[in-house]
Image (cartoon, rainbow, N blue to C red; front, side):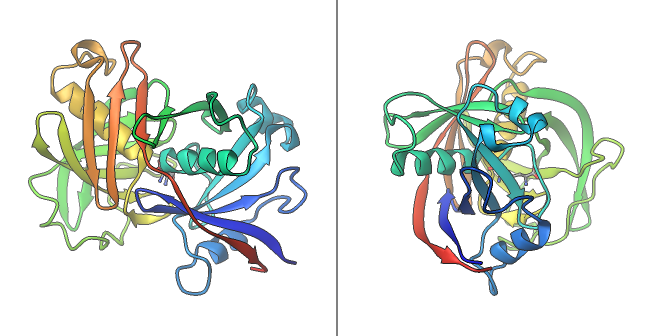
Length: 286
Ligand SMILES: N[C@@H](CCC[C@H](N)C(=O)O)C(=O)O
């Protein structure tokens, strides 16, 4: 069977997009197909898959999560597992909808996800801004990477994150070498966790590396950058809800694949701005 695909990325977090508007192409998108598509040597290659489907074509339980949005981002990690949300992916997804004339490019674009509807707007710098919703600052925990253990902040951005402030990003193996899933408390993260390692670069400016649940070390993670901003804002004197005195603050978050700007609105909502690019389109029989 041959079917269409596109390839895109946001700050080098790369995705295979699968247009499947009425759900007739991929049915239940199984893990084996996702792994084959994302394989870096035998497939198209990607950190994950974004299935582009109309909310109305989904089973009732999923459709309920996307209520109010015509389009739903059905996201899968490279290993075929499902995640609630993908911050870089939703920008790439919205760009695809704009490119294909599927939405009004001048209006806010609602995109359904397993973490509810995210609204994407065009940013002044040519990028896209996503209202990522309200973060949840949960407990304190720890993570172990390369045999070293750090205290970490548990931040929920719809998906689970552990944010650890470290002395140096360079001393923890080379870039792209966090191959083993970091050690973490399975009681805190029963479904696994995305782990962010962070250093300060200046006032409201941080840099990070990330090991993603289901994808390994990636060049960028949008929800991860948001979690990092929330943890940094708390450390900089915000209230326990992540808003407080940091509300309105904008942080620059540098990642191996680029830079994201993350802002905490006066209402305590996280606004993420960054680029999105489509680099290829074609058909595959994978
Ligand atoms: N890269 C994404 C996050 C993808 C999901 C994550 N690996 C998980 O399992 O929660 C992003 O940009 O947010």
